[in-house]
Structures are given as structure tokens and as C-alpha cells.
Image (cartoon, rainbow, N blue to C red; front, side, top):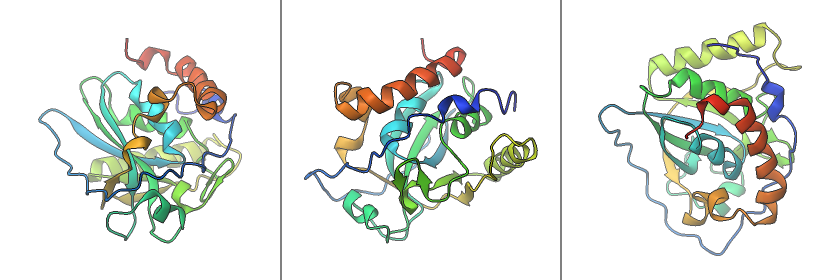
Length: 215
């Protein structure tokens, strides 16, 4: 875990609401089957609006795929509208398949901590509600131990002005979000929110993680 506090503030700016995602494209959403190909691993993170966070992880060398969806809740096949009622227990999350020979889980954790504010409970900027909470959903005991160690070290060195409230919970489910949420930034670069909010965040992200980006 190198440079755990390096430039974490680079991503703190430009918090605007992305809650206006409602679109008449609701559908029954199947439970994503976690079939991990040989030689790959999976990580599941929740850190606010998946429109933004998806675009960060997609650009990392060694990340094979990123799916936006809903994790940690108790309702089967939730729609976006259902999650927005704040009653399903789900968080907007990312299901990340990666090649550990090219990028480690530790490096993914570094990106996770530096691309959102882990000190605000059930909130990221103007987005408020339990669906925007900060969570590491671990798939193995090794992932759990690494997440807990990283969180403790960040708090110990005072990386943030307030204590970290990120939950570290066992993975139990992930439901892919509606199709129009997937690959959102890349498919909608001219959309106002993408130009004014996501693109500035991406510029900062690409500066901080230049060495880790896909060529």
C-alpha cells in the first residue's frame, strides 16, 4: 500500500448531484452471475454515483470489465426507481473483473479511496441517501483484511479531516443496472452532466493515476 495519502484530495472537488437518472427504460434485472474466468479476480465497490465511478475503473490497465449495478440490498431484481426509494437496502455499486497480474486488489483499493469522500455517511456531495453510501463488498477474507488495514492506516495518518465511515461488508449480491446506465460516460460524452461534472473529475483522475492507465 504505497503512497496511501498521495493526492487523495485531487478528487474532492466537483460534487454535483447525479440523482436525475430516471428514464422510462425499467426492466427486470437478472442477478449477475459471478463467473470468474481462470486467472482473473473480482472486486465490488460502492462509492456514490456509478455514472462517475464506472468511468474511473474502466480506464485502469488490468481491469477487464466494469458493470454498474446494485449491491448489498434485500430486494430481488431491484430497478433504479426502487433503489431510489431508499427502502431496498442496495447501494449503487461497481462489479469489477480484473487481472491480478496487471493490477492488484491493493491498487484498486487505492483508486477506491481516492475517488470519493469516505467520510460522509450515506452521501456523496449533493447525492444523498443510503444508495450512495461508501462500501467495500469483499469476496474473500484476504480482500477483507486488506480493506480493513487500508482504512485503519488512512485514519491513523489523518488522511481525511473526519473519520472514515466506509463499511466493509461481505459480498452477498449484485444486480446489473438498466442498460442505459452501463458505460454511461463513454456513451454520452456530450451530455451536460458528463461534460460539466464527470469530465473534470476524469481529468484529475487521469493526472493522479497516469501510470496506471490503459495505453
